[in-house]
Every structure is written in C-alpha cells, then in structure tokens.
Length: 285
Image (cartoon, rainbow, N blue to C red):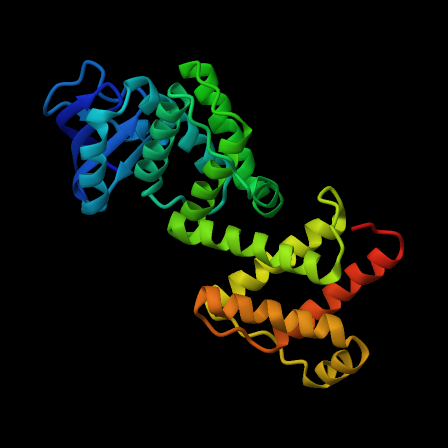
C-alpha cells in the first residue's frame, strides 16, 4: 500500500485521508492525527497500527459518532479492536468500529448513572464463543485500565456478541436472537426431561455446541446427511426424546423463519438420549 494523504484531522486518533485505491477514507489509529496537517502523508508502514473504513455508509456513521465520544475511549477502542484483529484468523467487519464504540460509550454512561443490565445469556455466550469472550475480557480490562471504569462481567457477554457478529458478518440483533433461542431451547430440554443440566459439565457444553452448530447450519441453509433408516429406529427406541427433538427443530423453524432439515431431529435425539442416561445415573432436577 502506498502512502495516505491527510485531508482533515478529526482528533488525535481519527483523520480523513485520501487513499490511492479507495478515495476518501476514515483512518483510525493511536495518535494518527497528532500534529498532522492537511496534505501531510502517512507512510504505509503505519498501516499495522491503524484501521481504514472504506465503505461510505460506515465512514458517514463513524464521522457522526466521533464528536460524541471521549478521545480516551477512541484510543482504548483502537487497542481493543487491534487485539481482536490479531487474535482471530477471520477478518472483522469494519462496522465493529461503530457498533462496539457506540455500545461501550453507552455502557459507560449507564455505569455512571448506576444502571446495570442483567445478562441472562452470559454462561451460554462464554461456552459458545470462547474466542470472542476472551476478546471481550480484554476489552473490559482495557476500559478499566485506561478509563477507570469497571463495566463488570455481565458486560463481557454483550461485548463478546458484538465480536461474534463482526467475525461472522451477522448483525448484532441476529446474534442476540440466536443466543436467546439457544437459551430457550436448553430451557425446553430441561423442562421436558425434568433435569437441570449442571452448567459446569461437559454435557452442558456439548448440548450448547450441538445447538449452536445446528443453528449455524440452518442460517447458512446447509443440508445435513439424511438418516431415514436411523430415523425409524430412533423413533421406535426413544419415542420421548425423538418427540422432544422434533419440538426443538420446530422452535428453530418458527424463530429463524427458515426450514430445518429432518435429519437434525435424528442427531438431536441421540444427543438428548445421552442426557437422559446421565439423569438416570444420578442427576437431580
């Protein structure tokens, strides 16, 4: 990449520049605007420590956001997103700069007002998205160190969902919808089986992972190998768990508004039957 030319300095950490391929861009980086003047050139070597917003709609939203955000927070966000980008093999959707900065700014404001939001999906989020959860832990730690505000553990879960959305190109509302659905599916399983699955067990982790991948397959429209011969056997051998599996796939269809392949019920039945056996071995409701 050749050098960028400064067009306008928004603050110490954000400038508008001219990019040789993308035209006008918003550039975010620690100290990127410090002592810069119009038409100054930024060397390509600086690119490792900065982000370039290339989409016009993202640029516009970010320009509107910057005047309302504390300069120290923008600097902290640069560190937080840089850490996430280095921690993952997948690229982060550039909308994370707007969505997560706005979210954390609002969380800090709520904290100052003494308003706390309970996160009912914290455990599920930690289990399902461990990589994103670590990124979020780093974010909360950085905010505490640089701004002196402890957003607390529950906020880690919300921030992790933002990172997951940015890594999978899903809108945060869609990610949250999936987390809520998984929590509801687990609750339905526990009710039907009359068994509270201990949260710190491999059984719980396996169930969450299975449901998560099932939802991902449905979201992408991926077919699952048909198991018609196995289906008949499962229906005969395990009628209760087979019926529960179909109930869960119906919930998925209704909430996601997408078809679920029948084979998913077969795979779920096998998984649920393992939980039934665990309950019979001494699990208590």
